[in-house]
View 1: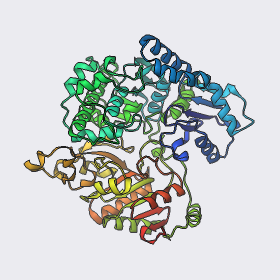
View 2 (view 1 turned 30 degrees about the horizontal axis):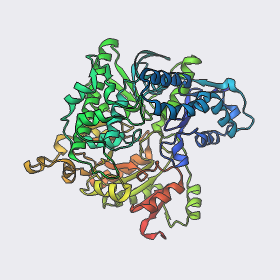
View 3 (view 1 turned 90 degrees about the horizontal axis):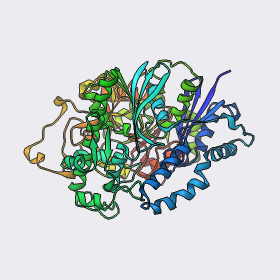
View 4 (view 1 turned 60 degrees about the horizontal axis):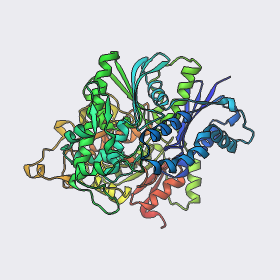
Length: 599
């Protein structure tokens, strides 16, 4: 009889569920994709429903249910924090305590009640277990890797107490050796600057990272001298005089504002200025330097060849790229769902290996390309499109590839809806918007006319795996879009002296390479390598585009508009298509032309 383990993460942000059957990953999905509420934190009812239906099992068939952290430890940390900062922070204390006492303190009961909503007969509380937050992160990174031993570095805002942990993994064993505890947190430091520059915490960090190359890191010394004390081994302490997250309802305080000479940016009133770009550039550089210092010290201390990364900071693909470029470790694996969503998978894996003592099986495709969610066959797609009143043409797969590649080469933009939905924050060629990377206007047009988001946001290249080194200063695979590298020198276009003197958003419209739509202002790109094994259909499309244009790359961005999660269903996809200025939509073997739709 097979052993089924359901992992769950929820109640803070990015709730999710994952299913292991005999240690093999079967499904992993995020609740936001079903509810259409971005970063949905609620119990993942819809995710679990999908997982059970997809495997044709009931909740009673599940052997073990594992929550990704320990609520009592988190409650202990909150209480101790308030006591240590008293009488400051009473407002925050008064706001959060009723919720904890009424709900979160009794989380086991809450989880069991939610499970009963799925199955009224479910009552076996002996099936429910609790992992620890950073152990879940560490397990999500190490066990899916193809390594038999590794150093595992996790960094995020905060779990129960830890904000950064170091674990040593050998075989099926994983043990946390050291940690940095709240309130000292690299994730919270980065989020403080996310808040300060007017972006939303636990969502806007990507924007801060994308804004950084427009600025100059002129505040690096100011940050080191006042905000964070970094030791030679990369460990650090934050000066709490400048932060408000321990005792207040904001991330930073007036002293922080005075240090930088500006108030917190109001995104509804204040434009992004060169100042905000310089601040973004500065905290990005500090983050990279701390992560590299940590990596060097861990290599020196433990002398392992492999590094695994997880936690929200591991989604900083620029920092990941710098670690790889420094060649500190021979191999690096980053969990594609490094944030809290991936905690659901890590909790299940930790239980399988550490509690049940099951051996680790090296498998380079354990994550299945992160294609772990719902998929729809052509009959389902056609039936749903008909019910939505869509106009479409059906073709063979070969013809779909041919027509799409040709239209892309002519500058048309495509919604691309194929196969299983991705797990994690990135669209990897199944729920994607695609375009021609050679276009000088595509980056701006996609942002403003299709994504409806800030014009400065960069787009990622999907490149054929075997061609990545021809176009980028990068060797190896990057299937999850979690590594940044520069465009190769011979593909770059040098800037004139006049262009070099431009600053801020003025840099946006300069053609920097042969593929300007995916070249950021610092000549960098967030790379996704595409192999025939991981995604054969997407590989065929890029190959056909390469045949036509000589460029083995497509612009790939997630299929959604600003403020919405990535599309999941056919209905989501059609609705998104109809509210943007996309030229075409491909759903399975059906092509929809925008000009033929009834509005």
